[in-house]
Image 1 (cartoon, rainbow, N blue to C red):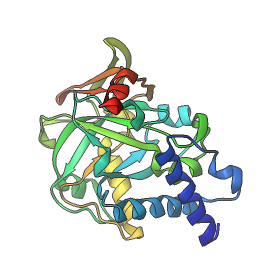
Image 2: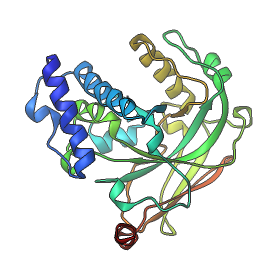
Image 3: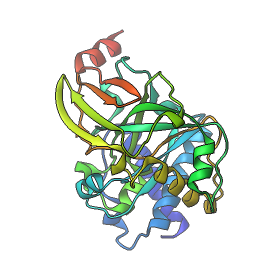
Length: 271
């Protein structure tokens, strides 16, 4: 893809956010697009958000578990950016119109106390950089119609980023073996998924290392205070207006996400 193709595709995806209507796959227009092209499209959108004041507050690793890779029909992880507008308070209803095709995943969230700059980051470096860990729910969303995505499409679409809900009880990393922590995922009181930290590249810490070493050559440093979501411990489940989703992660506690009902949205618009 040339520079104009990248800019036009980024503009189309940005328009899908703003119009609240999904668009066709990137590869439909550019079947030869590469992963490098896709990250260039992603970066163009991130730069536009920053220009508007929506600054980067962290990163996410997507497609980090075999379950998610099978679900999305891809064979490698990817990464995206988390901006300040993506963070929501738990229990506080999120307007239903925020998302187009939301799904939700349970994750361990790293909050960094030191910078991580790859390449060459090791597990030891990653452990030293983590200030504390929180339970988290990530809302993933796609600006591509019907989630018909290739690896190029999801990367271009900021790794299908949507929203982040963090728990409020920080836990030191030394108190956890992230390979072994288990989680449950309930939607409207019904158990729908279970998983464990080992599903995320063997350990969520491996995912943090992968991210630092992948973004480092691109000139990106993972900054102190930023949040890193290393990937889901289960398959992503659909989330509809009015749903309440709760994950419980052993040693970390619970976090709750509420997607407002359509009636809530209508009342808000009327007000």
